[in-house]
Length: 112
Length: 445
Image (cartoon, rainbow over all chains, first blue to last red; front, side, top):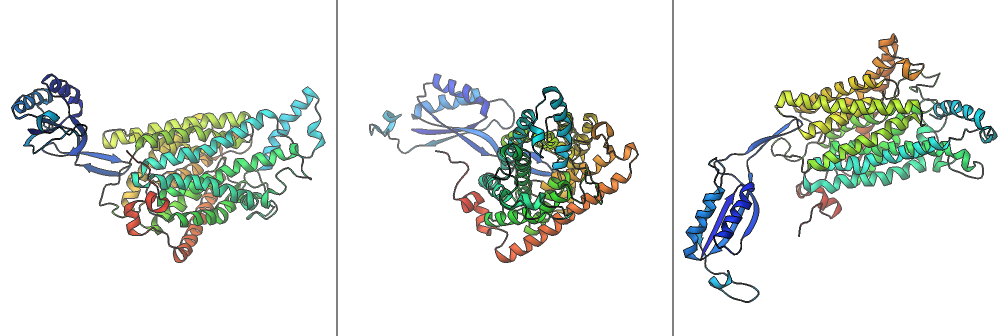
């Protein structure tokens, strides 16, 4: 199994979710995150005070798939989340040790 | 103040008497307000209370960091409680009792001679009761305004004692000077040394609190990390709602200060609205030009600045002059909050001085310039040839500022020695919500 984490733009979430569902993914977890890469932050002004906000808000998708599904899923994210501008985000793929469905105790691919 | 109220009401009632031939007003010495006036004054009193919470509570609450929002809300709510009780017990008497030009007396302790009693019938008490409760709302919001200066770091216990002493030793005397019939700065006191125009509290509310705020912010010191770490407002949505509530509440504050539902109240209402609107425009445009974008916080601050500035003038200038005052206030307060504060480096956290001290002073001066006989009937300002009014205005500004500054300085120095002004460094880092009140503003899950 692989764990795929993708940090993407907020407004791309629906599109990415639809593409992933179409690719056969049965579930995912989404969190609001903040961070920076090549896209730097911005300046905010409140009355006289100016602040540089380095951490840019993004959405992180996490999903677990079988090894042979991995490439298809990564492609689906790539195709839908890309705008071509700096700040489109990143995809991380890693090997996953184990997954367990809490209700039944099923493990591995059956738990997904 | 009573005299002003009665003077205006007599005319109204005598015309009523001719029409209806009622005699109730003749039976008592006190003139009984008619139902329209009573309804308006009760409404106005409620509107002024609404300014403290939710108005100011949300306005200030949104501006602090999220670990301190409850501390600001509690300061407002607790002051609504404490200052009201103090007002009933002794504050009203200290502000409006007696014939001395400088201080009140003990005549009306526990609202004696104000509330209905064996000697004072229900009908006869209406006038005094309305005045006492309306003025009581001012007694609440004025110290609450100061909270903006020491937000996010002052001990709650010290804040309570400070507000209590400040109310008695700073607010009550200034209110007496300006609004008691015998006050030495009172507009309608023929024996006043310097009869100043202050319709709804430019000196009594805004200069007194604004100048005290400056002293507070300097004596209590900067917030930990001020200037090094970002301290952006945590929820400008609240601030915007708060500003809108303040705007609405201010109609009670200013138009209510006519003390009747009459032509003066109408003028005050319209002038107030115009000034607030002009304040929004001035501050926003100034930001637009200087920073490239108009901000929500700027628009909201501009409205408050315009409202502060028109407060002493609402009963003495017309609505178009109100626009001028609002424009001036929006721009001058913008400069005070962005340039002045940065130049001198004091941490007036929520700009209580920058908006109320500066805007109040500006308003108290400009009413001396623009006051017109068209509105006041008798008093008029520099533009209509009465340059001396500027002297009266200046003296009232200096007097209110001096008592605010000296009074706050002494109270804070004493409290610093006795109980300490600030929370500990650790408490400040954790936030006042948790350390002063044992609660959190935002609990998710």
